[in-house]
Length: 395
Image (tube, rainbow, N blue to C red; front, top):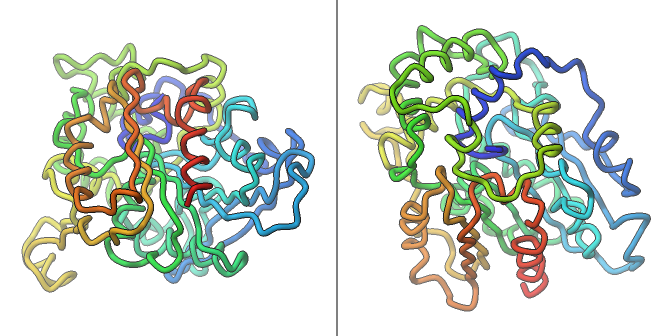
């Protein structure tokens, strides 16, 4: 399912309305529910950003029951989810099929990030989630604050450069951070699964309509505050979208992410039990701007004088992906049936890497995969994850 998909924003929005009745009570941590039960060690960690958010992270320091038993320093891997979900989405299949546990068994020191606003990252040094100021952020802040905070913590505690894995929005904030030079001294290599940077060719009618709608209705419908997919306002928003001609709200998964080939129904049920998560309304607006404008740029405040006040320019600054260092090893995997990370948009992204060191970039095209297959596919281990850890071990 459009799992930690980037624009599953909608997918989620949607999924959630159909299943909004299953409102989750306070849940135990990710370690307790999804890692320790399978025989792996796991630590719950709190990370503070420079703007005061207290973020949750899990560390899986070694493989199942201590295997492999080695005293050598295990290379750290940081895994980043997408929008409207949290780190749990990497752990929904049986342990033999979950990327974090596979990597732990392969000798990596695994760290799972949970960005601000998700259920275990709803704390701040002075703000409460009930205050609009708590939600005054977009994915720019994930680039500037959250991802660097996670990298700094892992780097400080391992004294090693870090392998990075992002899916969907996790690829966007990784690419943007690398282009800004924020993490260049701490990253060892990066794997981008179902990458999102350009969305001009997104071919889901629901996604396109939502992107067009989100700005015009945002101030009256949601305001500058929490975007709760299970809330009444999101339900009303979905109802409006589903009334548009050509929008199929009966098969939401396919209509948002594309026809995923390889999802298990029990995994989808587990996803619906645990997700979706809240994000900032401002973040949703920024994502919609990315779709509509065809540009990878910072948040647009909608008026030249407001942009001038924030950026010293009338237009938001662009994230120039060509500035990503040419010697950073990159693994990029994308699918032929992905409605969010469309093949044409991925090609636009790959154009930025045409001068990348040829021995430092690896491209994988999986013809039958759509957006959610990369995170929940039953055969993702054989098709994608084996390639990821082989790439990491090579670099």
